[in-house]
Image (cartoon, rainbow, N blue to C red; front, side, top):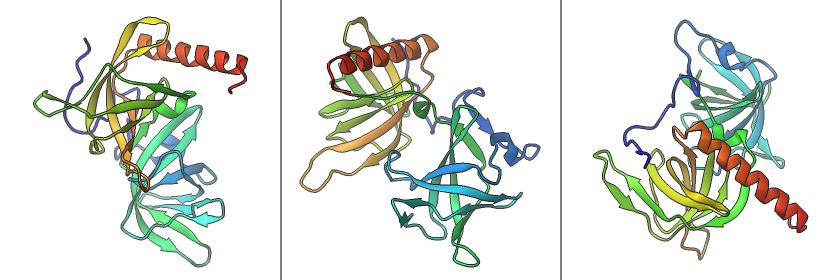
Length: 243
C-alpha cells in the first residue's frame, strides 16, 4: 500500500516543479513574447480555457493579450487570481498568478504578477480516456493522516497524470485523496494519491460535483501501466467505432 501523505498543496519533486528564485529569470519556463498560454480562473474548469499570448515579460510584470474563447473575453478583474498553462518543449506548466491590471488602451490585455513558481502539469502531458470506474476505495487524507471516505464517487476520465471524478462530496482544492481503483484486464489495483486541483459545482438540477485532480508522486511503473491501459482501451474503442 502506498502512503498518501497529507499536508499543504504539493509542489512536486525538483524534476516536476521548477521554482523561480532571484537568480532565475522568466526564461526558465520560456514565458517570452509570443508564447501561447491558456488561462483559467482558480475555480474554473481546466478543460474550458481562454487563449492568450505573452506580449512582454519584465522583472515585475507579464503582459498578455486579452484571453478569449469562442469570441468571448475572460471575465476577470484586477486583483483576481488566474492560472496559466504554457506548453514548453513538450512539457505543460501550470502557473498560478494574479491580475494586476486590465488594459483597454492602446490594446486590450492583462497585466499579471510574475509567478513565483511554475509547476509542471503532468495531467496534460498524456491522452485522457473517457471512462466510468467506481473506485474500490476513495477518501480525503487529513493532516493527521486520518482518512474520511468520499460519498458516491466515480472516475469519469483518466490519464497518466490525473483524473476527473464526479462525487456527492465536495473536497477543497489542494486536498489530497487516496484513490484505489482497478483497471479492466489488470489483476493489480492502483493505490494512488491525488491532489484536487479544482471542483465544479453541480449543474442545475444535478447533485454531483466534478472533481479534477492530478497524481502525486506516482511511481513511473504505475504511470506506464496507466498509459498502456489508456492506449489499449482507445485501440479497442476505435476498433468498435466508438472513438
